[in-house]
Picture 1 (cartoon, rainbow, N blue to C red):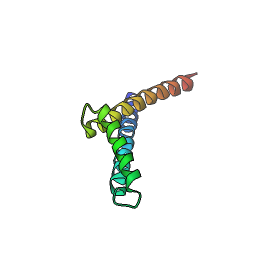
Picture 2: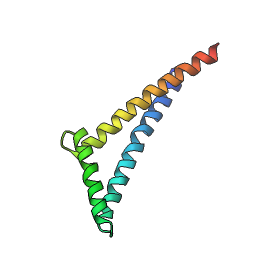
Picture 3: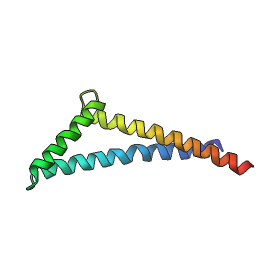
Picture 4: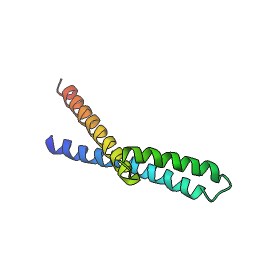
Length: 94
């Protein structure tokens, strides 16, 4: 049972880390590429706002902001997985 929890926890934490990292990178890349489109003003404004948001969480560095958000969501996903695993084993035994 312990190995099953560990594998599930590592998989869940990994997915919860990678999903926001990929999404933030795609959004940042799309907004950067959008600065060459006819909607350059909107795209540049959106990119600047996203960079400011990430710099706030990253103590001045954009990628450190992405990593801190991803680590936080990974921990939350891991805690939820542990809770769900506990409830499943408790309900299964009764």
